[in-house]
Image 1 (cartoon, rainbow, N blue to C red):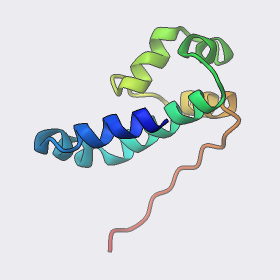
Image 2 (cartoon, rainbow, N blue to C red):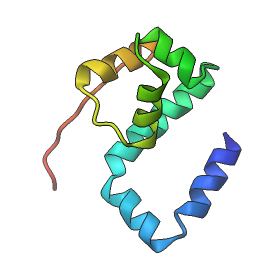
Image 3 (spheres, rainbow, N blue to C red):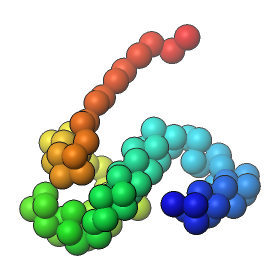
Length: 93
């Protein structure tokens, strides 16, 4: 995971990448959690796809941010990764 952190840190030094990352913060945070959890569980994208009855390309699109998943799909991903999906909405201060 150290290599991922180093790669992320390097990318975020670019002002445009950093701005886009901050604008999409919650989306990127969710993607990051999914990727980390999948790797921790020792699963490939193909293996995760098999567990949630979809294609590897759907997992790839999810992890790359090129997919707008439904809550039901995210719930399947969470269950396959032995995790819990928790959605929160709070007022801005």
